[in-house]
Length: 113
Image (cartoon, rainbow, N blue to C red):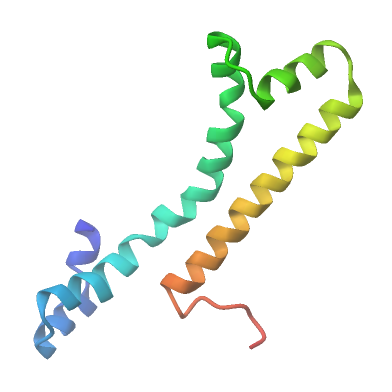
């Protein structure tokens, strides 16, 4: 937010006479939140896969426990199924981030339109 406050388009918006609320919501937050949204997809997937360790340490039943048991028991179908599940979850999280990215910044759209 501090980086965006000193940009030229903020100064232009102030000189046009926009209210501080409009400047913050329509200009500052829309541009400051883009890097945060970009990181949310991979962080969400990392959070989900990072639960493997927590489930093992605190003996919490969950998918991570089954994944690790599948590895230990050489249950290839379980390991493959869980890997595909987590891979699809990562793809879905990144797809949702891309959609949100297009909503936040209308300049970012699918090419070819």
